[in-house]
Amino acid sequence: MIEKDWLEKDEKYLSNALYRIFHLVIEKGEGPYLFTTDQEKYLDLTSGIGVTQLGHCHPEIVKASQEQLEKLFHISCVAHHTQNIKLAEKLAAILPGGIDNTFFCNSGAEAVEGAIKISRYQRPGRPNLIAFRPAFHGRTLGATALSSSKITLRQNYDPLLAGVNFVDFPNCWSCPVFKKSETCELECLDLLKRMFKLHLPPESVSAIIIEAIIGEGGYIPAPKGRFNYLKELRSICDQHGILLIIDEVQSGIGRTGKWFASDHYEIEPDIITMAKGLANGLPIGAFSAKHELMSKMPPGSHGNTFGGNPVSCTAAYKTLEIIERDNILNYVAEAGEEIIKHLSIELKDYAKVRGFGFMLGLELESKEKVDQVIQKCFAEKILILSAGTNALRIIPPLNTEKPLLLKTIDKLIGIIKSCS
Image 1 (cartoon, rainbow, N blue to C red):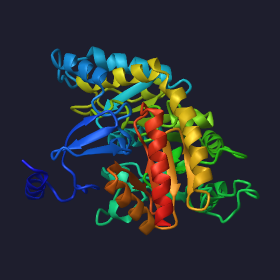
Image 2 (image 1 turned 90 degrees about the vertical axis):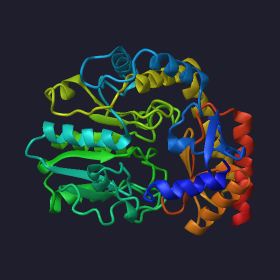
Image 3 (image 1 turned 90 degrees about the horizontal axis):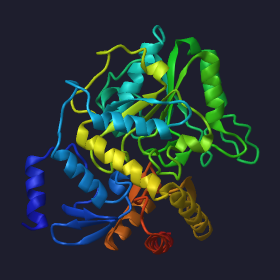
Image 4 (image 1 turned 30 degrees about the vertical axis):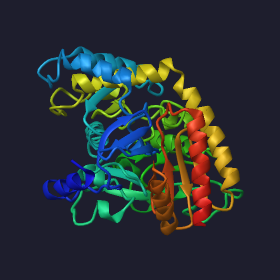
């Protein structure tokens, strides 16, 4: 059946609510490439929106998953299972600081929901939460209430979760308090302090949730130069007994050249969420905290049916094992730094370049320019995504070979210049 026929069936039988960026029908993936039903080959710089950390259908992950499929598909909470325990132990070795205890679920949104629940459970009588604008934390109602990257995420879904309060993210490329980098004294932090003074008593707040690098809202890293915003935020949380949640759903599992983006800021969150890259494409999410914190939630206070199933846990364990064994974190850190320097020089007059590792954002002058670049890349059989209103995101698989990556980056540079 040709692609056109597949798309007709898609329109007839699948919900229109799920937006697809490219009207391709993909039949298989291999490494950094996707292949359509019409046998066209595309270079995937989207990684399934930051999911396939080691490329499509990595043979070792496929093999490990197949072997697990022959042993056990599913068990839910009926009993314990070995793969769940193995993965939790593996994560404890790479999580920041003393975080050593994990709850597995199915997605990033579920991980955020779990983080909300544990925060409120641990801070009874403190119903309020603080999130940052323009963050994205997921599509469930609680996670949607914490999100502000696009109006379409929230439109017609009110009333959402009560008690959510927003403050502007510290964007050094478009300062929320109109300061220049050379004169900045981290005045953006005053937005939070002013909120506490005027209308939101800090003792009413159970948690603050933040992305170390804003994802859907534009690929914007928190300040880490003259000032370390996340360290300051950690200090404020400690001062007021507020739990700090770092959302690493998109930025975690080696995407930035460290296991977690918050590692760049040398802080330890109280709770950390993860999902996308964890099992290289199989559905899994997680939220983690210190055993002391997690153990205060009694059995039955949270749960799900499919979360942390044996096959997904097996794929996740193998993903982490390969990243560690093949020294991929160092490769991503070094190659990412080289690419950022190259882009910054070549696109000095065309884009604001930012990011860490293989989580790179290119802010262009308008949404129209971003759309033009995406379409020109598509014509060259390169898939690339937008982020926020006027930025591109570059998120290739972490093991993409350097010559291919550099060649593609040069092609992208040429396309951006041609659109400007």
